[in-house]
Amino acid sequence: MTCVVALVHNNLTVVGADSLCTYGDNAATRNDVKFFKIKQVKSPDVMIAFDGDYRAADLMRSLRLPEQKELTLDREVNRNFLILKMVPAMQKLFKRGNYKAGEEEIGSNFLICYRNWVYEIGMNYSIQDPALPFAAIGVGFSYALGAMHHAYLSADFGQMDPAKIVIDALEISAEHCHKVRGPMKWVPVSHIEIPNHDTQKRRCSC
Image: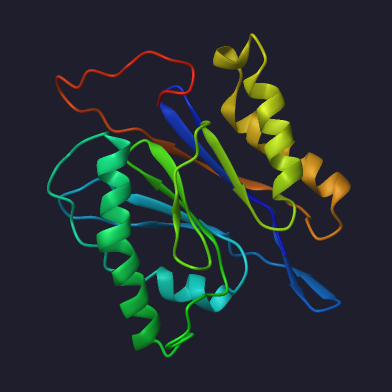
């Protein structure tokens, strides 16, 4: 069990996670982090974070994601790419690794930092596009979402340190959920720039 979060803030996405791994009633603090980067040749790199089964995450680290030819920040276009290209690549990878072969659900949820936004892949491979610029997965997700939403509603949200918002959300989750535990770790993901791209200026834009 865990808590993993991502926050889109101005020209940056920050991903954070706790360090707890549980096995039934047993628990251990892991040194390996719950997020990793998929390198792309012609497209921006993809940051992936996970909860649940470490086996799924181990396989995902070797995912060969097809290149999206169109460099766009259109979230509908990018979500469709994840549905039509990334999910089949994941299913193929899991089958090759003899993981959950033939099953409709996997043992993990994933946060995908893709093209300046955060998408969630559920255990049934559904792709979710959050309306607000933050997302969380893991057993402590609701506490973290509440903490980030409180920050988002603040008049000073634009001037806040995104790393602090993420760490505070994880710490609050740990305070209320015994299956979330530090040390809390985070990583910044720089946003890409597209020449002549007309970005609408709004609070939840990226």
